[in-house]
Length: 438
Image 1 (cartoon, rainbow, N blue to C red):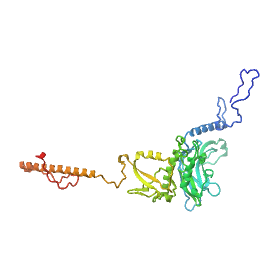
Image 2 (spheres, rainbow, N blue to C red):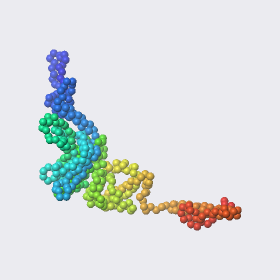
Image 3 (cartoon, helix red, strand yellow):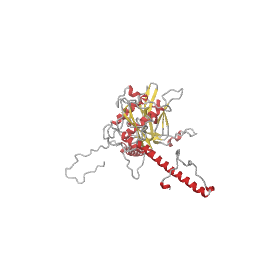
Image 4 (cartoon, rainbow, N blue to C red):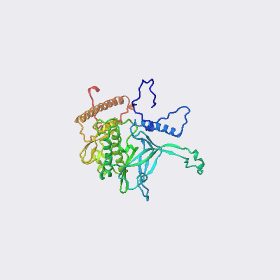
């Protein structure tokens, strides 16, 4: 703020107060400090650093206009230790892009292999921890060319290229009981912990983010046991980012679209990883206490002829119906916001079988349907009519052979009977004469 004296003051006039109250030079503008550039000013390292901080801050503000989460890639896979090795194993993180809740982007250009032990503090591992990709800024000094054949020359240190580089650091954030206290059953159950995380996010207000999202971009939640890592769940904490921010929910506690999609993907990933290449386990064997209100299950979860349940709890009542493939996304979107289904109570579930629009029929899955007697009556009538016309054709051919044979027997060529172009076994057809044939 620039201060100027009062022009042409009245006798005895003085300043009583300034609103807003100036805080300079005690104000902490942070990255909002802008460099005042003018002709002839010398640029130093501090000035250029402030300019980069201001630019990064503006980019972060722009990133806050999008929903935080994973935009592309950043898949996390557990790699167990090799035979004969000790340790907790490794995490392989694929390249990708994410947006943190602060608006900063997290970019990983290559696959990274990280030892789990390097991410944990000293002592026993926590029961539950969340893997987070944190945006960081590091100063790179010196010439660090690993392929350079020459030894380091200290006389060249004055010409070293000092750079400020954006990077990514991976952290394991232990579960804080202040978020929600976990008992032993919840901490050891992949499904129960995932829905505890879903409940925390659904209870947040508009514009709020989960506590673990303040650190960076969540990539996976890890559950540890006595023998090491028991399971790794990606979609319990990963949310689709880069879209418009979530709107205010019409129903408090209902959540948002990214959360509904995560519930669907979490079930599909859990079932696929548990199954592997073997037979499909049941929901009870997988320890699934809650299921999303809409989801995708393997084709062998139910048998359609007759309708047999092979995955869901035996107390559930199932119905099956076909649906055009083009309408499946709309049905899933409308049902995704409903309350989860409990496997401990009796539920009624509709199993939808997507089929192409060209073959869709409402009763496509009905196998014991009794046809209407009118169908058989109409078939019998048409068969009788066909038999009558074939008999008339046979009579006319016999009359033709008599006439042609009387004129010249060498020109007589009789038609084969039965005809080679018949559609089915037509039976014995006697020649039929009508008044129209005379």
